[in-house]
Image (cartoon, rainbow, N blue to C red; front, side):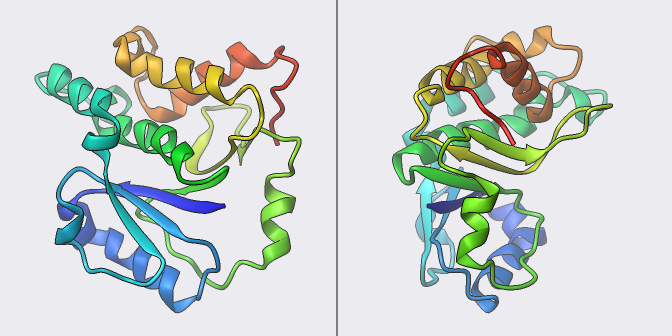
Length: 196
Protein backbone atom coordinates (compact mmCIF):
# COMPACT_ATOMS: atom_id res chain seq x y z
CA UNK A 1 0.00 0.00 0.00
CA UNK A 2 1.19 3.48 -0.84
CA UNK A 3 0.05 7.08 -0.92
CA UNK A 4 0.45 8.80 -4.28
CA UNK A 5 0.49 12.43 -5.30
CA UNK A 6 1.94 14.59 -8.05
CA UNK A 7 3.31 18.13 -8.28
CA UNK A 8 6.17 20.21 -9.66
CA UNK A 9 8.60 22.59 -7.96
CA UNK A 10 6.28 25.59 -8.38
CA UNK A 11 3.38 23.78 -6.72
CA UNK A 12 5.68 22.38 -4.03
CA UNK A 13 6.69 25.90 -3.00
CA UNK A 14 3.12 27.22 -3.26
CA UNK A 15 1.35 24.55 -1.21
CA UNK A 16 2.43 20.92 -1.72
CA UNK A 17 5.17 21.23 0.91
CA UNK A 18 2.30 21.34 3.43
CA UNK A 19 1.13 17.89 2.29
CA UNK A 20 4.59 16.44 2.85
CA UNK A 21 5.06 18.22 6.18
CA UNK A 22 1.67 17.02 7.42
CA UNK A 23 2.42 13.47 6.17
CA UNK A 24 5.59 13.46 8.26
CA UNK A 25 4.28 15.20 11.39
CA UNK A 26 1.22 12.93 11.58
CA UNK A 27 3.49 9.90 11.19
CA UNK A 28 1.64 8.11 8.43
CA UNK A 29 2.58 4.43 8.24
CA UNK A 30 2.58 3.77 4.50
CA UNK A 31 5.08 5.25 2.01
CA UNK A 32 4.33 8.36 -0.05
CA UNK A 33 5.23 8.29 -3.75
CA UNK A 34 5.44 11.69 -5.41
CA UNK A 35 5.47 11.86 -9.20
CA UNK A 36 7.19 15.05 -10.37
CA UNK A 37 7.83 16.63 -13.76
CA UNK A 38 11.33 17.74 -12.87
CA UNK A 39 14.42 16.23 -11.21
CA UNK A 40 13.50 14.22 -8.09
CA UNK A 41 16.83 15.24 -6.54
CA UNK A 42 15.64 18.86 -6.42
CA UNK A 43 13.22 18.08 -3.59
CA UNK A 44 14.04 17.74 0.12
CA UNK A 45 14.67 14.07 0.80
CA UNK A 46 12.44 12.85 3.63
CA UNK A 47 11.98 9.50 5.33
CA UNK A 48 9.43 7.30 3.52
CA UNK A 49 8.81 9.93 0.78
CA UNK A 50 9.90 8.70 -2.65
CA UNK A 51 10.19 11.00 -5.67
CA UNK A 52 9.79 9.61 -9.19
CA UNK A 53 10.15 11.51 -12.46
CA UNK A 54 6.71 11.19 -14.05
CA UNK A 55 7.90 11.90 -17.59
CA UNK A 56 10.45 9.08 -17.37
CA UNK A 57 8.00 6.43 -16.15
CA UNK A 58 5.06 7.72 -18.21
CA UNK A 59 6.47 9.17 -21.46
CA UNK A 60 2.91 9.37 -22.79
CA UNK A 61 2.29 12.09 -20.21
CA UNK A 62 5.06 14.29 -21.58
CA UNK A 63 3.85 13.60 -25.13
CA UNK A 64 0.29 14.62 -24.19
CA UNK A 65 1.48 17.82 -22.53
CA UNK A 66 3.74 18.75 -25.45
CA UNK A 67 1.05 17.95 -28.02
CA UNK A 68 -1.62 20.02 -26.27
CA UNK A 69 0.19 22.83 -24.46
CA UNK A 70 -0.90 25.24 -27.20
CA UNK A 71 -4.54 24.90 -26.11
CA UNK A 72 -5.67 27.84 -24.00
CA UNK A 73 -8.49 26.75 -21.67
CA UNK A 74 -11.29 29.22 -21.04
CA UNK A 75 -11.71 27.79 -17.53
CA UNK A 76 -10.47 24.90 -15.41
CA UNK A 77 -13.10 22.55 -16.86
CA UNK A 78 -11.28 22.79 -20.19
CA UNK A 79 -7.74 22.36 -18.82
CA UNK A 80 -6.99 18.75 -19.73
CA UNK A 81 -3.24 19.30 -19.55
CA UNK A 82 -3.39 20.56 -15.96
CA UNK A 83 -5.33 17.51 -14.79
CA UNK A 84 -3.55 14.90 -16.91
CA UNK A 85 -0.60 14.56 -14.52
CA UNK A 86 -2.88 12.98 -11.90
CA UNK A 87 -4.10 10.29 -14.28
CA UNK A 88 -0.61 9.38 -15.45
CA UNK A 89 0.70 9.39 -11.86
CA UNK A 90 -2.10 7.05 -10.77
CA UNK A 91 -1.30 4.70 -13.64
CA UNK A 92 2.45 4.78 -12.95
CA UNK A 93 1.88 4.10 -9.25
CA UNK A 94 0.71 0.58 -10.10
CA UNK A 95 4.38 -0.36 -10.36
CA UNK A 96 5.01 0.69 -6.78
CA UNK A 97 2.00 -0.55 -4.83
CA UNK A 98 -0.84 -3.05 -5.17
CA UNK A 99 -3.23 -0.67 -3.43
CA UNK A 100 -2.72 3.03 -4.01
CA UNK A 101 -4.32 5.93 -2.18
CA UNK A 102 -4.10 9.04 -4.34
CA UNK A 103 -4.18 12.38 -2.48
CA UNK A 104 -4.18 15.79 -4.19
CA UNK A 105 -1.09 17.82 -3.38
CA UNK A 106 -3.14 20.67 -1.90
CA UNK A 107 -4.38 18.35 0.87
CA UNK A 108 -3.13 17.98 4.43
CA UNK A 109 -3.07 15.05 6.83
CA UNK A 110 -4.72 15.93 10.13
CA UNK A 111 -3.85 12.81 12.15
CA UNK A 112 -2.33 9.36 11.77
CA UNK A 113 -4.59 7.09 9.74
CA UNK A 114 -5.20 3.84 11.67
CA UNK A 115 -4.20 0.62 9.92
CA UNK A 116 -7.75 -0.78 9.83
CA UNK A 117 -8.97 2.27 7.90
CA UNK A 118 -7.19 1.20 4.73
CA UNK A 119 -9.13 -2.08 4.53
CA UNK A 120 -12.38 -0.29 5.36
CA UNK A 121 -11.71 2.25 2.63
CA UNK A 122 -10.60 -0.26 0.01
CA UNK A 123 -11.58 -3.88 0.76
CA UNK A 124 -9.83 -6.61 -1.20
CA UNK A 125 -12.85 -7.19 -3.46
CA UNK A 126 -13.25 -3.50 -4.42
CA UNK A 127 -11.34 -1.92 -7.31
CA UNK A 128 -11.94 1.77 -6.61
CA UNK A 129 -13.02 3.91 -3.68
CA UNK A 130 -13.80 7.62 -4.00
CA UNK A 131 -16.06 10.47 -2.91
CA UNK A 132 -19.13 10.01 -5.07
CA UNK A 133 -21.24 13.06 -5.91
CA UNK A 134 -24.17 11.61 -7.88
CA UNK A 135 -25.59 14.96 -9.00
CA UNK A 136 -22.28 16.23 -10.34
CA UNK A 137 -18.83 14.92 -11.25
CA UNK A 138 -16.83 12.72 -8.87
CA UNK A 139 -14.44 14.34 -6.39
CA UNK A 140 -10.95 13.11 -7.29
CA UNK A 141 -8.88 14.83 -4.60
CA UNK A 142 -8.83 11.41 -2.98
CA UNK A 143 -9.16 8.14 -4.91
CA UNK A 144 -8.04 4.64 -3.93
CA UNK A 145 -7.29 1.89 -6.44
CA UNK A 146 -6.87 -1.84 -5.85
CA UNK A 147 -4.55 -2.96 -8.63
CA UNK A 148 -4.84 -6.65 -7.65
CA UNK A 149 -8.34 -6.75 -9.18
CA UNK A 150 -8.29 -8.13 -12.77
CA UNK A 151 -10.17 -5.09 -14.15
CA UNK A 152 -7.21 -2.81 -13.35
CA UNK A 153 -5.46 -3.19 -16.71
CA UNK A 154 -8.62 -2.50 -18.69
CA UNK A 155 -9.48 0.44 -16.45
CA UNK A 156 -6.10 2.16 -16.88
CA UNK A 157 -6.05 1.43 -20.60
CA UNK A 158 -9.34 3.32 -20.96
CA UNK A 159 -8.59 6.03 -18.37
CA UNK A 160 -5.09 6.86 -19.59
CA UNK A 161 -6.10 6.18 -23.17
CA UNK A 162 -8.31 9.26 -23.15
CA UNK A 163 -5.09 11.30 -22.93
CA UNK A 164 -2.90 9.10 -25.10
CA UNK A 165 -5.50 9.38 -27.90
CA UNK A 166 -6.65 12.95 -27.07
CA UNK A 167 -10.24 11.73 -26.72
CA UNK A 168 -10.45 13.66 -23.45
CA UNK A 169 -11.29 16.59 -25.74
CA UNK A 170 -14.43 14.78 -26.90
CA UNK A 171 -15.93 15.08 -23.41
CA UNK A 172 -18.04 18.05 -22.35
CA UNK A 173 -15.45 18.85 -19.65
CA UNK A 174 -11.77 17.88 -19.62
CA UNK A 175 -10.81 17.37 -15.96
CA UNK A 176 -9.63 14.10 -14.46
CA UNK A 177 -12.97 13.99 -12.61
CA UNK A 178 -14.72 13.68 -15.95
CA UNK A 179 -12.31 11.15 -17.45
CA UNK A 180 -12.61 9.05 -14.28
CA UNK A 181 -16.41 9.17 -14.45
CA UNK A 182 -16.40 8.32 -18.15
CA UNK A 183 -14.17 5.30 -17.50
CA UNK A 184 -16.16 4.18 -14.44
CA UNK A 185 -19.47 4.35 -16.24
CA UNK A 186 -18.11 2.28 -19.12
CA UNK A 187 -17.02 -0.47 -16.74
CA UNK A 188 -19.96 -0.73 -14.34
CA UNK A 189 -21.23 -3.94 -15.95
CA UNK A 190 -17.85 -5.70 -15.90
CA UNK A 191 -17.69 -8.74 -13.61
CA UNK A 192 -14.63 -7.74 -11.61
CA UNK A 193 -15.40 -4.02 -11.42
CA UNK A 194 -16.64 -2.94 -8.01
CA UNK A 195 -16.59 0.52 -6.47
CA UNK A 196 -17.19 1.96 -3.06
